[in-house]
Image 1: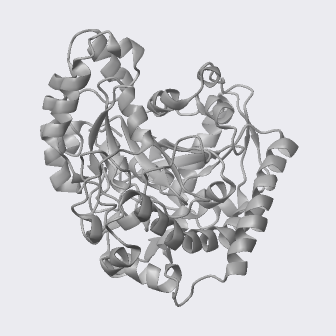
Image 2: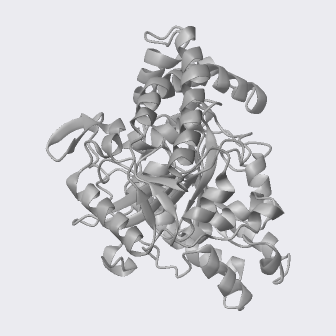
Length: 477
């Protein structure tokens, strides 16, 4: 399906869409960073009004930063892969001198005095922070709704949800405003928005990128990672952080790759149209020489159902308290809680606060973290070794992006069946709990033009090999 910007009216008309586009334009002298940002900002204003992409977009700061990197000299684009490249940042990541709200009322005027290390690293590589993107409040949610800053609309149809919690990040990429965005992922918050908006989303193994200076949910599960317009954009982001030995890893060809297809439970309740598109993708992989290994991995989903949320809900209160004490000492967690929007407040009252009605018992948390999670990590390694596969592949979500419906915010209808909205997080859960690297890639569209994604999981802490295996697995570009 053609996605002409003028026809659809939901894409920036600015011609630079990928990191490679920016690098080429700068190296050939067709544009400077300042000229690029001046042309891009009007589209950002227009699209933000339609989709609620940003919480903060400081145009003067964007231009000041463009002038700064321009002052490095034109040769800087050769030495710095992200020189002059705009990157949007989820508004849970601290940015020096730029309002960072965490999407919550108590920090609505908070301007940090320092940036998270990941921002410092990217700016040292020449990147331009292009706005702070909307997200579910404190990253608590999967629909892209924020009670204070509005509902982010899907880039292909703004009457549909963008997914969450990294909603604005995904839409900023999908609308062509930036080639890269920074998101966070605890259970599915990079990969589901990427799938719903037809872009790439990479959840790294914990520790690949520095989490400091980023609002937490659960330290055991939280990661920060990129959403990109192309796989090459994801790799450009990763190259800034990778060791020299990792940067030299060669992309694998499709022929000879062995991909585990854990159908069974991973395909349960998946919409017919989504499953048909996924099966066509599998057929294309086989046609190009990949070996598909159809072996179930139901125990992974069972482990995620048992272990993910006891960790997520139990760690939030202490982790957020520690974050505020270190980074925003003027705001207490009690003050933050009093200002929560109705949807997040209900979750905190039920599961998170020390006196929560259904707070998980300490032994349940310990069992989930020390037994279920460790067993799942072992199960991942065993599956890969036993079946000699390079990655798992499965549908990213059960459905395409559901309609925005605040009256039925907890449920969606899939092929006539009423399901929890969180069903779309299900297939991402095992990788999150195991600490496995995961990648969502666009594989097609539904009849009404909504994106469909496939997800791949790797072995925990084997990100370089995983990315090399994924390099040639997308055919949409």
